[in-house]
Length: 127
Image (cartoon, rainbow, N blue to C red; front, side):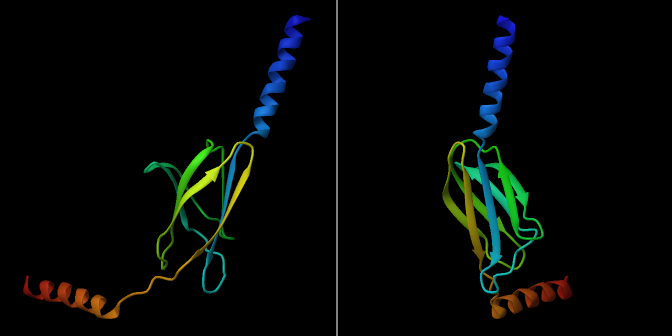
């Protein structure tokens, strides 16, 4: 009978810890068109160290579970957009944190790009 009670208590504790999980859900969109950004790389860091990384799905969403409670920095990289860093995203026990992020299109300075192309071309010719 005592073994049965211990087993029931252990199973109860396991089910309670299942409900106390944390979740970080991130939505990534193009800031100008408001369209989803699929395949954006999401890196979650704590004190400068990478904790986890994932890519957004076709709807621009990534769902990260089981992060320890605390504050994290979220870094978003996507081709054709400026890198976005969100510092101090707070994750609490038993809660879902939602981040809705808008990326800015990367602007290229054509004069500097032309200079780089010319420099590479010149060095290729003289070599």
